[in-house]
Image (cartoon, rainbow, N blue to C red; front, side):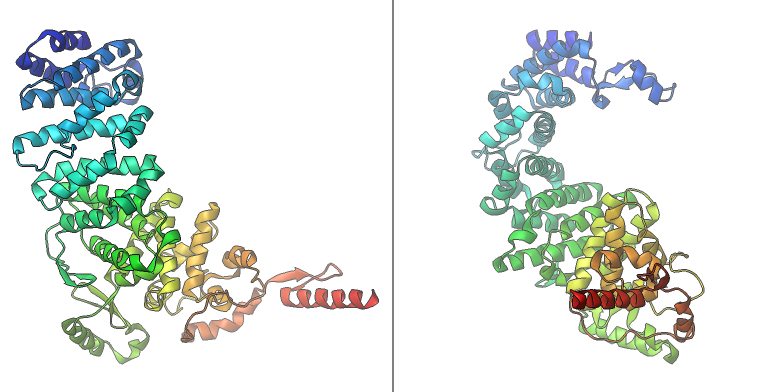
Length: 540
């Protein structure tokens, strides 16, 4: 009956009556369906229409007609408040895929584009009273584009991506219209997700990379102190909820725009990628309004950093300023002389320093990785991106690798417990080396292998042979040796505890079968097979 009454007023009533009936429809309480009662507390007896995401099939025809009626109202000269009420109901109804086929026409899409100020003839966003109409129109477009293939095709025909970029340029430096930016970016993300052609258009024709990077700069209020360095206020307030949501949508859109960048990277793009990486470094060093929002923000930053060419990730670390260098020297002098091996990493005024470089961002990534391990679930989606990122950073940038080695694989002192037993980051990563998910255990093993400069003896020292066997077998390194990549020849100093325990390690050796079927150390078995092959060759 709700749809019938609303439809009757929409068809025959004047603007004031239409506004009232549609507002009542949005706020109307309805009884739950039986399926909903099974998954909801019995005390929840009614639902508001605006919170509805599943619809009764019996009312489908009525909802289609109500949508058509609303579009007819939107082409008329009605007050802004009436437009907002119409769009709110349209947003609710557009969640139902089944009713969108007859209402998703080019004409109706153009109505929404006009109301969202996406037409090229609209020069500015001066009328604050129109902002709610713009926001609601963008919300409707998000739902319709997501749920309708016809709308997705019309978006290409109407060049919607270009119009969205144009709207972003109008409001990129105006913080009081964050809602407009947020839903503009969300729609841009959906388009670039659903159409690979739009990704290319955004990247090259529409200059989406610098545009979206500037949106992030604005959301974070970045002040540059050098070409790729920004000022960080550790005591500053967290991002507002609106700024955080806007940044998250921009990060998601940028991910789609740059998803294939590592394949087509040109030297001329290095500056832009470094600027973006510097913005992402800033992102990692700030917090959102809640812990969950901060994690979501950092998670999207990690995903985007994975698309940045690894050669441009050097901006994640930066040399200390003159003042910071003086503070570091003071701190090093304060450390006891017997802590020589631990002098490299210093925490001073909330700044993680290593070898004269600011390592704050890398430290945040390391903590983020450990939190994802501690969650104990969704490793493939939640953990592998940050592990892959840290692995590639370590492989390409010596200072990052040495810092992470210092944090993850410090000098080995506990030689009584197995490598997988304990609560350190090393223990947690070693446990992942035998995880049931092949992708998870491969990337965990690869990360530790790179930290060990791809030296088998060093990896075995920290992980044990059994845990490393899968990686070594896959690389053909069961008999020892090292990987294919070149690393600096800095020494890996053993502790006294490890030196004393090292002879006892030979109680566990890799074994193999001799030609006569008996068990022997693997190296000896391989030698005997080699001799046997040579003998057979001579006989032939």
